[in-house]
Image (cartoon, helix red, strand yellow):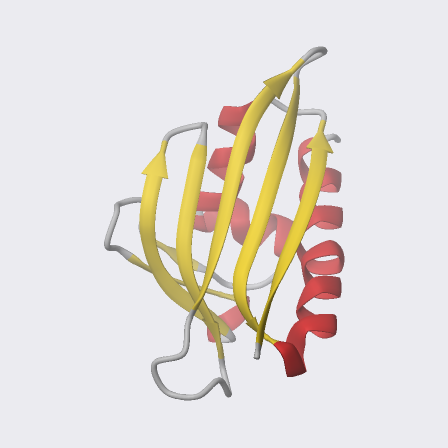
Length: 130
């Protein structure tokens, strides 16, 4: 059985900065501390965390929305989940990320849910709010 992760994160940075950090190989590597290859086009592939995570961009709306098919090493062949990042501008130059990750294997739910907090939101905030 699969589960869904939902997070809402607010970062003191403009949506274009958040969008750029998520889809720029160099910026992504800077905030995660791990290598990344990221296409900025729909249908383009990405890998992060040195290839531990991989997938394909399904939808890209600059500074507003990113939807990606995701998978981690060790998942059954062909198994993907869908990660959606919706960005909205808030007062004071902030961005709210409404994040949904659908199709997460139940056996990996706890680790992946915590992984988003530890390995994405916390370092992304530190990187963009400095």
